[in-house]
Image (cartoon, rainbow, N blue to C red; front, side):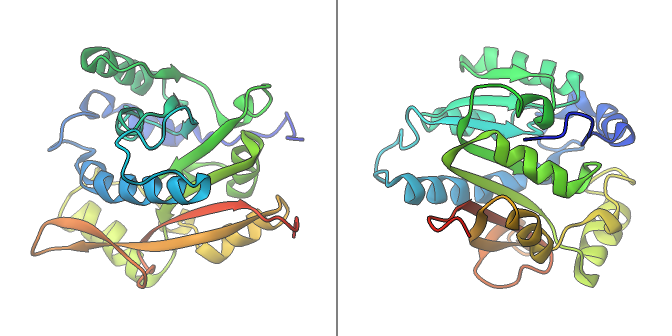
Length: 252
């Protein structure tokens, strides 16, 4: 069970994002990199869920009737496409301003999405469990990454699938995620990231060890400067990466 006294929220991180909450759906605003990331994130997420639940990949609503939780959903950039793929989506975020933006945008799009201003540790105490839990570009902003992973798993059904994307803690990610993104190219506001909080795949593997979950697939996410877009890579996870994890049948 999750220890109720622990907390994953860093108030200074919430304050950092709240400054730009109104820009969540501005493709040229503070969250422009996430808009560019979205196609490859959704491609990986859809593929992994389909494989895990043995769905028909040719179906437009391939995620129909699956209960999906997006932790740290922000303005709903991932919730909306997953809903359009048939999922019953719930998005949560500790930033109430982002949740309000997400609610208004979903209403304008005619999408039925459940949004809540809450945390993964609070939701993990509830009876309802999910088929899929997404934690995208969030673990590098939490107070206790290992505890955060435990709360994500506690929100899942026993046979569920967990999807995580983040930045690796390497020299390359310092140059790309901090120096280039924040100072040279100014893709994101200064102070958005702290290199010491980036998480290595080996660390996530270690966090998962006590949860009976294992990494099933991992792809790097690389940026093509000439094409101006991100792409998935079977190699090259030294900067951004995205992974799926599920409980092993052996429980090891």
